Length: 94
Image 1 (cartoon, rainbow, N blue to C red):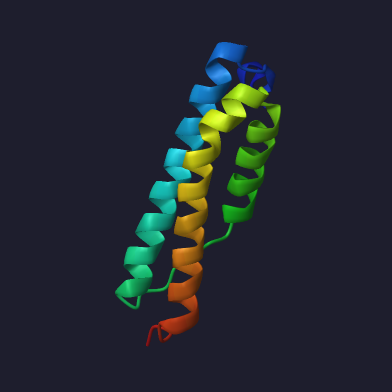
Image 2 (image 1 turned 120 degrees about the horizontal axis):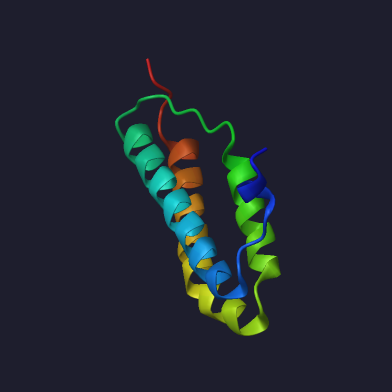
């Protein structure tokens, strides 16, 4: 592991990093929903790790920063639920 990856972000950057990770995860979920909608297979391996890392970052935020992240995390949850619904109702790829 590179040394820079092991160092924590400065407090002023923690919220920005959490938002960037949430945005990247939202993008991944959006692409997955498009692929499922086209009846193409998707590989969701590793998604739990990305979500876990984001959750850990969110827990490290100050209470004020956590409140600022709330709408972002709620939007991310909506994406997860939309993908889950699509996976449950869309026929498997041929």
